[in-house]
Length: 100
Image (cartoon, one colour):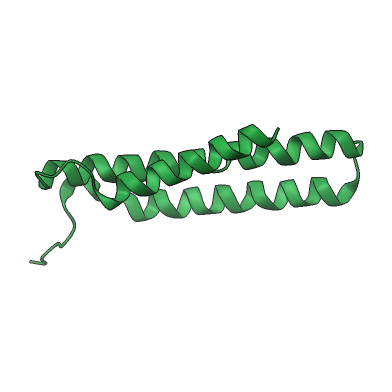
């Protein structure tokens, strides 16, 4: 009989993380190939590039928020480091949106 150090409610997250990492890497490679292919005008390339930097921080903001929600259940405090990381990612997205 083995002893598991992973709580049941978060079991399987390593597989989900691996899938998300592969998907993010594939999207990054596709974006790079699109930029290198010169398929759009310079204006279209600039707009798409700016939009990527608005959308890209939203996924880590969401995942940090999910981690914060898990931590708040165990900790009586209000803000965890995950909350601050989530706010930082949202600030990054907002700053990128202001650039557009």
